[in-house]
Image (cartoon, rainbow, N blue to C red; front, side, top):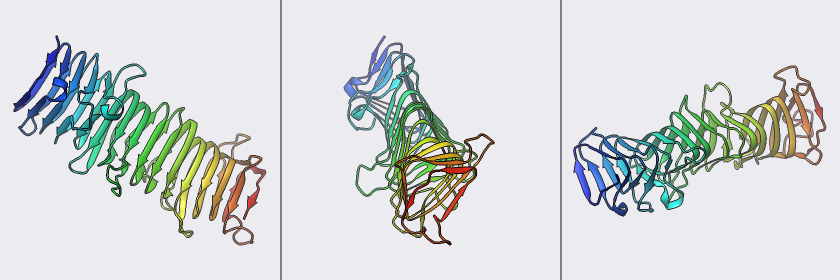
Length: 364
């Protein structure tokens, strides 16, 4: 049977269960647990339509055969807690104002199970200024918008496609996106990650769709990572930030098609792009008014324009295959170096190629 909650429920702890759908009276009803560390759980087998849940402990919302929805369809908080949040359903929220609005320090688990369409749309705020996303397993789109909080990924996050965005509600506020040590993010199709602050990557991989990572600050890779910070399969990879990588820790990439590396840094003495790349890689665009370091292990094809004030480029072989360790420049592509070109001590900054070069046009 369905269960409709029409008013306000206040208790030390609460567990609401229905074999049908739990509906919170067009979003105006509320459930509050007012004792520290006491749980609040709502489960409707065929669906849960939320008003407001408030707790001092863990909040769990579950629907084994239905969806968890924002009944109000606005940005008023659906879940407010000082504890963890656990969500599980065939799908969770919907796009735009239909996203679940959550004010919590930690989203412990998000599970959306509908085959290929189990979307989860979350809009996160945090009274303490930061939100931790631990584990998420989503068969469709995972959209996490955090306009008032830093977003930290601390566990395993997987989805068919992904949107992370910390663009602030108030212009001028800066909010970071950070992966902690040991965390992973994996997507099958497209991924879009946008930060008003910095982005720090541990392990972020995509199989077939386009991957776009943009920061108003810097994009860096965590220290001590074995392998790539960012892996991109057959789709295009686009990175844009003030700086990408650093002289102390290069950003490790394993990407077939790098569509664009754009660094906005204008101080020419700074290496604004520092990349360690592996595999069979095509680079379509690199653009910075500062210095760039690009070290390739495998083979590298220059497919478009490379523009930098200074460029240090190396291509090293990782195996004995005939194409490994080679540098190829496609007809019509170009390399433009503003500074270190044209004399014997500063030719291109550095150019090292393990097995040979097939065409190279460099302009100053």
